[in-house]
Image 1 (cartoon, helix red, strand yellow):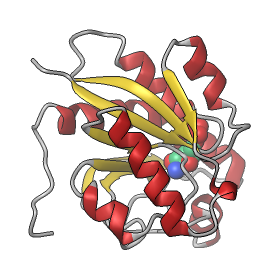
Image 2 (cartoon, protein in one colour):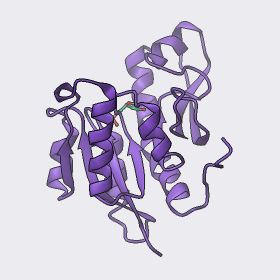
Image 3 (cartoon, helix red, strand yellow):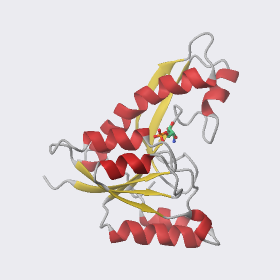
Length: 198
Ligand code: GRF
Protein backbone atom coordinates (compact mmCIF):
# COMPACT_ATOMS: atom_id res chain seq x y z
CA UNK A 1 0.00 0.00 0.00
CA UNK A 2 1.29 3.41 -1.02
CA UNK A 3 0.50 5.70 1.93
CA UNK A 4 -0.90 9.09 0.97
CA UNK A 5 1.28 12.11 1.80
CA UNK A 6 -0.74 14.49 3.97
CA UNK A 7 -0.23 18.10 5.04
CA UNK A 8 -2.13 19.44 8.05
CA UNK A 9 -3.10 23.11 8.15
CA UNK A 10 -3.50 24.67 11.59
CA UNK A 11 -3.93 28.08 13.20
CA UNK A 12 -3.80 27.25 16.91
CA UNK A 13 -3.95 24.49 19.50
CA UNK A 14 -3.76 21.58 17.08
CA UNK A 15 -5.44 18.81 19.07
CA UNK A 16 -6.94 17.30 15.90
CA UNK A 17 -3.51 17.57 14.25
CA UNK A 18 -2.08 15.66 17.17
CA UNK A 19 -4.67 12.89 16.83
CA UNK A 20 -3.82 12.51 13.13
CA UNK A 21 -0.06 12.49 13.79
CA UNK A 22 -0.49 9.82 16.46
CA UNK A 23 -2.71 7.65 14.24
CA UNK A 24 -0.26 7.93 11.34
CA UNK A 25 2.57 6.54 13.50
CA UNK A 26 1.01 3.17 12.76
CA UNK A 27 2.58 2.00 9.47
CA UNK A 28 -0.73 0.31 8.60
CA UNK A 29 -2.52 3.67 8.58
CA UNK A 30 -3.09 4.69 4.93
CA UNK A 31 -1.70 8.22 5.36
CA UNK A 32 1.58 9.69 6.54
CA UNK A 33 1.80 13.25 7.85
CA UNK A 34 4.60 14.93 5.93
CA UNK A 35 4.19 18.51 7.11
CA UNK A 36 2.25 20.86 9.34
CA UNK A 37 1.67 24.37 8.05
CA UNK A 38 0.40 27.23 10.20
CA UNK A 39 -0.71 30.70 9.15
CA UNK A 40 0.16 31.91 12.67
CA UNK A 41 3.79 31.85 13.86
CA UNK A 42 2.68 31.32 17.49
CA UNK A 43 0.33 28.39 16.91
CA UNK A 44 0.77 26.01 19.84
CA UNK A 45 0.37 22.96 17.58
CA UNK A 46 3.69 23.71 15.87
CA UNK A 47 5.61 22.69 19.00
CA UNK A 48 4.01 19.25 19.09
CA UNK A 49 4.66 18.72 15.39
CA UNK A 50 8.32 19.72 15.77
CA UNK A 51 8.74 17.40 18.74
CA UNK A 52 7.20 14.63 16.62
CA UNK A 53 9.91 15.34 14.00
CA UNK A 54 7.43 16.46 11.37
CA UNK A 55 8.40 19.27 9.01
CA UNK A 56 6.71 22.51 10.01
CA UNK A 57 6.30 25.68 8.05
CA UNK A 58 4.71 29.05 8.79
CA UNK A 59 2.98 30.87 5.96
CA UNK A 60 2.01 34.01 7.84
CA UNK A 61 -1.08 35.59 6.28
CA UNK A 62 0.00 38.97 7.65
CA UNK A 63 2.95 38.96 5.26
CA UNK A 64 0.70 38.96 2.19
CA UNK A 65 -1.30 41.87 0.86
CA UNK A 66 -4.17 39.79 -0.53
CA UNK A 67 -5.90 36.47 0.04
CA UNK A 68 -4.84 35.44 -3.46
CA UNK A 69 -1.15 36.03 -2.67
CA UNK A 70 -1.40 34.16 0.61
CA UNK A 71 -3.18 31.23 -1.05
CA UNK A 72 -0.56 31.13 -3.83
CA UNK A 73 2.22 30.87 -1.21
CA UNK A 74 0.29 28.20 0.68
CA UNK A 75 -0.26 26.26 -2.53
CA UNK A 76 3.45 26.42 -3.40
CA UNK A 77 4.32 25.14 0.07
CA UNK A 78 1.96 22.18 -0.34
CA UNK A 79 3.41 21.41 -3.77
CA UNK A 80 6.97 21.64 -2.43
CA UNK A 81 6.15 18.89 0.07
CA UNK A 82 4.71 16.71 -2.69
CA UNK A 83 1.42 16.42 -0.85
CA UNK A 84 -1.47 14.17 -1.94
CA UNK A 85 -4.09 15.27 0.61
CA UNK A 86 -4.60 18.29 2.86
CA UNK A 87 -6.33 18.22 6.26
CA UNK A 88 -7.53 21.53 7.68
CA UNK A 89 -7.61 21.22 11.46
CA UNK A 90 -8.62 24.43 13.15
CA UNK A 91 -7.26 26.42 10.19
CA UNK A 92 -8.95 29.79 10.49
CA UNK A 93 -8.58 31.13 6.96
CA UNK A 94 -11.19 31.23 4.26
CA UNK A 95 -9.47 30.17 1.02
CA UNK A 96 -10.09 31.50 -2.49
CA UNK A 97 -11.59 29.40 -5.31
CA UNK A 98 -8.24 29.12 -7.16
CA UNK A 99 -6.51 27.08 -4.45
CA UNK A 100 -9.69 25.17 -3.63
CA UNK A 101 -10.16 24.18 -7.26
CA UNK A 102 -6.64 22.83 -7.34
CA UNK A 103 -7.14 20.69 -4.22
CA UNK A 104 -10.73 19.76 -5.08
CA UNK A 105 -11.52 16.34 -3.68
CA UNK A 106 -8.15 16.28 -1.90
CA UNK A 107 -8.76 18.72 0.97
CA UNK A 108 -10.68 17.86 4.15
CA UNK A 109 -11.89 20.02 7.05
CA UNK A 110 -13.31 19.23 10.46
CA UNK A 111 -16.22 21.35 11.57
CA UNK A 112 -17.77 21.32 15.06
CA UNK A 113 -21.41 20.71 14.15
CA UNK A 114 -23.63 18.16 12.47
CA UNK A 115 -23.53 19.76 9.01
CA UNK A 116 -25.53 21.15 7.32
CA UNK A 117 -26.58 22.57 10.71
CA UNK A 118 -24.55 25.46 12.09
CA UNK A 119 -22.12 26.35 9.34
CA UNK A 120 -19.69 29.11 10.29
CA UNK A 121 -18.51 30.11 13.77
CA UNK A 122 -19.87 29.88 17.35
CA UNK A 123 -21.53 26.55 16.62
CA UNK A 124 -21.79 25.45 20.26
CA UNK A 125 -23.36 28.72 21.43
CA UNK A 126 -25.90 28.55 18.60
CA UNK A 127 -26.83 24.93 19.30
CA UNK A 128 -27.45 25.72 22.97
CA UNK A 129 -29.42 28.89 22.15
CA UNK A 130 -31.67 26.86 19.84
CA UNK A 131 -32.34 24.25 22.51
CA UNK A 132 -30.85 21.57 20.25
CA UNK A 133 -30.85 18.07 21.76
CA UNK A 134 -28.06 16.78 19.52
CA UNK A 135 -24.84 18.34 18.33
CA UNK A 136 -21.57 16.92 17.03
CA UNK A 137 -18.85 17.19 14.44
CA UNK A 138 -18.40 16.57 10.71
CA UNK A 139 -15.46 15.94 8.40
CA UNK A 140 -16.16 17.18 4.89
CA UNK A 141 -14.42 17.86 1.60
CA UNK A 142 -13.59 21.55 1.22
CA UNK A 143 -15.35 23.39 -1.61
CA UNK A 144 -15.58 27.15 -2.25
CA UNK A 145 -18.86 27.50 -0.34
CA UNK A 146 -18.01 27.66 3.38
CA UNK A 147 -18.63 24.41 5.33
CA UNK A 148 -20.77 23.06 2.48
CA UNK A 149 -18.67 20.38 0.76
CA UNK A 150 -19.74 16.72 0.79
CA UNK A 151 -19.61 15.13 4.25
CA UNK A 152 -17.24 12.18 4.71
CA UNK A 153 -18.24 11.25 8.28
CA UNK A 154 -20.10 12.66 11.26
CA UNK A 155 -20.52 11.86 14.93
CA UNK A 156 -23.17 13.10 17.32
CA UNK A 157 -23.14 13.94 21.02
CA UNK A 158 -26.05 14.86 23.29
CA UNK A 159 -26.58 18.42 24.46
CA UNK A 160 -27.09 18.03 28.22
CA UNK A 161 -29.10 20.23 30.59
CA UNK A 162 -26.86 22.96 32.01
CA UNK A 163 -24.35 22.74 29.15
CA UNK A 164 -22.32 25.86 28.44
CA UNK A 165 -20.54 26.48 25.15
CA UNK A 166 -17.35 25.30 26.90
CA UNK A 167 -18.72 22.01 28.27
CA UNK A 168 -20.39 21.23 24.95
CA UNK A 169 -17.23 22.13 22.99
CA UNK A 170 -15.21 19.78 25.19
CA UNK A 171 -17.68 16.92 24.61
CA UNK A 172 -17.57 17.52 20.86
CA UNK A 173 -13.76 17.81 20.75
CA UNK A 174 -13.41 14.40 22.38
CA UNK A 175 -15.28 12.78 19.48
CA UNK A 176 -13.62 14.96 16.83
CA UNK A 177 -10.26 13.23 17.20
CA UNK A 178 -11.33 9.64 16.42
CA UNK A 179 -13.71 10.99 13.78
CA UNK A 180 -10.93 12.77 11.87
CA UNK A 181 -8.65 9.73 12.13
CA UNK A 182 -11.41 7.52 10.65
CA UNK A 183 -12.41 10.02 7.95
CA UNK A 184 -8.84 10.54 6.74
CA UNK A 185 -8.37 6.77 6.59
CA UNK A 186 -11.52 6.44 4.45
CA UNK A 187 -10.28 9.05 1.99
CA UNK A 188 -6.58 8.07 2.00
CA UNK A 189 -7.46 4.42 1.34
CA UNK A 190 -9.72 5.41 -1.57
CA UNK A 191 -12.80 4.00 0.17
CA UNK A 192 -14.49 7.39 -0.14
CA UNK A 193 -13.83 9.95 -2.83
CA UNK A 194 -15.53 13.13 -3.92
CA UNK A 195 -17.36 12.84 -7.20
CA UNK A 196 -16.06 15.36 -9.71
CA UNK A 197 -19.62 16.35 -10.57
CA UNK A 198 -20.10 17.93 -7.09
C1 GRF B 1 -12.06 22.13 16.41
O1 GRF B 1 -13.21 22.26 17.20
C2 GRF B 1 -12.45 22.00 14.95
O2 GRF B 1 -13.66 21.32 14.76
C3 GRF B 1 -12.60 23.44 14.54
O3 GRF B 1 -11.60 24.14 15.22
C4 GRF B 1 -11.25 23.42 16.41
C5 GRF B 1 -9.78 23.15 16.31
O4 GRF B 1 -9.28 22.55 17.47
N1 GRF B 1 -12.50 23.57 13.10
P1 GRF B 1 -7.80 21.97 17.48
O5 GRF B 1 -6.87 23.12 17.04
O6 GRF B 1 -7.75 20.83 16.53
O7 GRF B 1 -7.55 21.58 18.89
